[in-house]
Amino acid sequence: MLLLAVTGAMPISAAHAYLDPASTSIALQAVVGAIAAYLLAGKYYLQKFIGLFRRNKTTDETEEQAAD
Image (cartoon, rainbow, N blue to C red):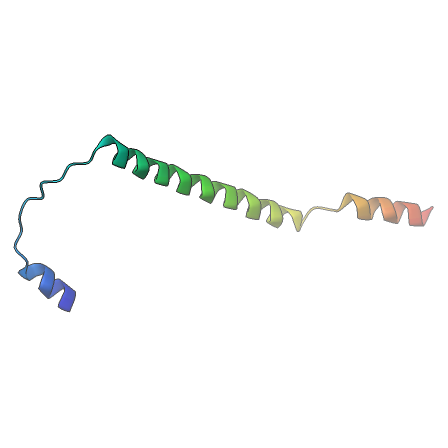
């Protein structure tokens, strides 16, 4: 509430700002990096999840040798 009251009491004026190509390039790199990190983390955890349901080949081979 206090933040809204203070923000409402501030005078509204035009911002005379300039974004050069370097700052937009950095912002774009940050967005692309965040997306890449999200995708890689998702791939890692998806593989771990699928691995829970997959049979282990070394365990299968050991069981076959023990049965012989």
